[in-house]
Length: 349
Ligand code: NAD
Image 1 (tube, rainbow, N blue to C red):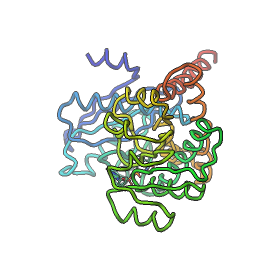
Image 2 (image 1 turned 120 degrees about the horizontal axis):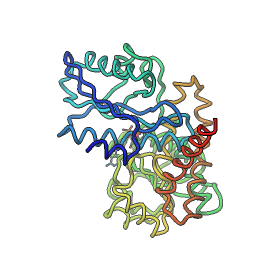
Image 3 (image 1 turned 45 degrees about the vertical axis):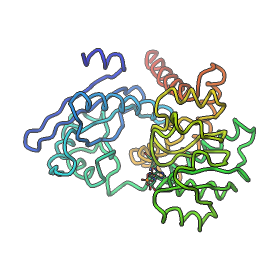
Image 4 (image 1 turned 90 degrees about the vertical axis):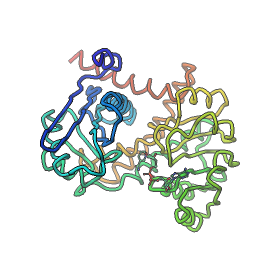
């Protein structure tokens, strides 16, 4: 039944890979290459079943098509998963095997680090193929680029909601002060916003309290915090039945992946009049940074591309408004329109 599933989900190619010597069992899913090579990370996970692994690869690769398309990059969507125990694996053999399979696809798929894989793993992949990003010798920390994009998404949301992107005097509640959260706090502080912050790591809180005059909030209180904007920068699934009724903000815009526990929570935000900047549009700075590695862009060029997230988020809001659909659905529509436009051009060549 996998053929029905991939036909329904729109995948071009799904490759099952096996290497006896290393015990490598991998699935490489290429969803769509209309815009360019399918780019997406490699997840290493002890899946409960092969089916779970396939579904994860299919779902995540499709997500990358949308993310890359909305970011305005000439990249398609793909993803790979490796089935196995992350702790006991013989990493060099395993990731070199992965590299050989990636190489066999001739550049149709470009792999990268993801959950369960590291920069060192990608160095092993690089021994076998050039179709890999995020390797130790090249990559920079993407977080400042991601934070810039999220900041621009917040500005666009403010413009949509209040008619001005000005953030002076606005209060932003930030959940998670890790790599992205810290840089976002800095951007917002410079823009004159007041910050309410939380993290499970007290040291990270102290730093933004001291550097940016932020006010610390207990972990569970971040949802009900008296703020204008909520910026989730820690975990996924935090917009759910329990948290949404607590929100008093008018805007949700942050870096975390998969913020909506289920699609219907996007509808719920909409019905409460809370403007949601779709996560994968707001956090596209991460993939922009990866793209810069492929194209040789400077850090400055990446930041400028991340700045364009402002216009992209506004175009999502405009489409949502004109068609009467929630913003999370409008984001998908914007991605589909870009792919359809390029496909249309290809037909006339
Ligand atoms: P990170 O691990 O550096 O930071 C996450 C922070 O959240 C940590 O400080 C952690 O202590 C804190 N945290 C964990 N659980 C928490 C909780 N229950 N309440 C409050 N704080 C909690 O990760 P990051 O790189 O900053 O990424 C943050 C989010 O953005 C993730 O969801 C990530 O997938 C997404 N994202 C990151 C990038 C990037 O460039 N780093 C790009 C796209 C998306």
